[in-house]
Structures are given as structure tokens and as C-alpha cells.
Image (cartoon, rainbow, N blue to C red; front, side, top):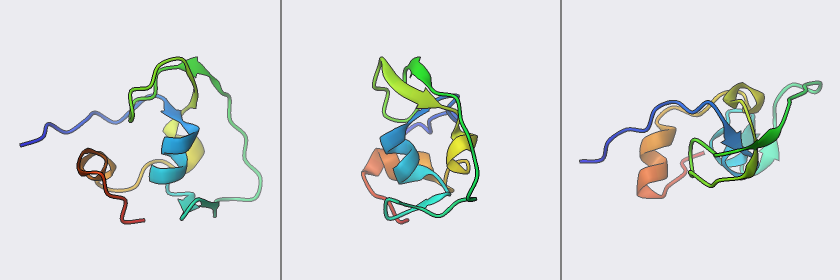
Length: 77
């Protein structure tokens, strides 16, 4: 059985587009006016280091069961 990942503090752009609620099939569907602060760190989803990340809220937070779908390699959108 896979251990669930904790909700991440930081998310990279590719993971945010895949697992964020404000994205559907790679298209932004969130509010028209938002802003975020990016910096270099480790993504809490894919564990890539030294990548540009921001908080999950900047992607509309994460989809339900994002961590289990990430582990098995699916994205139900």
C-alpha cells in the first residue's frame, strides 16, 4: 500500500497545471485576476529540486486525491 503524501507547501508550474483546481486539460479556468509569488525550491508533488514553485492556493488548491493519482500515474481531471 502506498503512503499518502502530505499536502505540499510548494508546487511547481507543471504540477500546478496538472493537479490544480484552476486548470482543466492544461487550460486556465480560474479567476481572471490573480497574482502569485514564485521562488526556487523543491516541488512538494514531484520532488524536483531547484525549480520555480509557489503555494498550492495559487493553482486554486489541489484536486481531491491528487496524491494517490500522482502515485499511480493518472489524472482524472
